[in-house]
Length: 150
Image 1 (cartoon, rainbow, N blue to C red):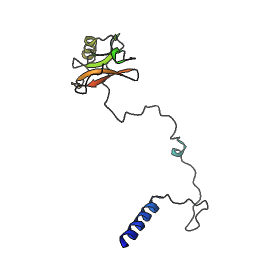
Image 2 (cartoon, rainbow, N blue to C red):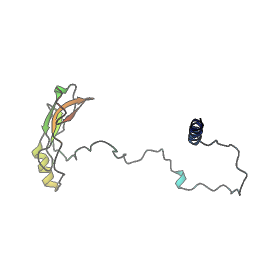
Image 3 (cartoon, one colour):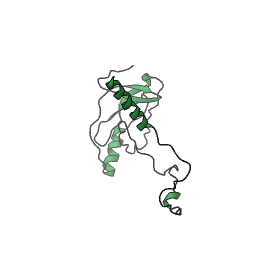
Image 4 (tube, rainbow, N blue to C red):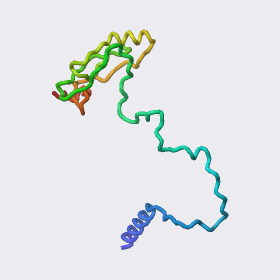
């Protein structure tokens, strides 16, 4: 019986602690009151105003760094899984597989030449792809070992 009463009181305290404090519309009369201060310049900034900088990504894998591909526009569009295939798009290290539209042009040698011309380097390595699938109109890679969807 005592344990039950103690449990009920404990639950009541938890619920009470989770409720927000009541807001009183009348100003407090205890303590000294100060004159209102003039708004500062920082207060004039609207935090809801759009920033000129885009928000950084906060989740998921980062996309590969894109190097200018002279004359080649990669096509990731698809309607079905059959529209997608793994192709070598190249990067500053050499071979770099990505899932693209089966008819998309690629020019890995031009990418490597651009890297050499600009002195760029990249982190070498890539996730092994087991295949591709069409996800919301874009070809996406299937990591090796997850099975190929055809």
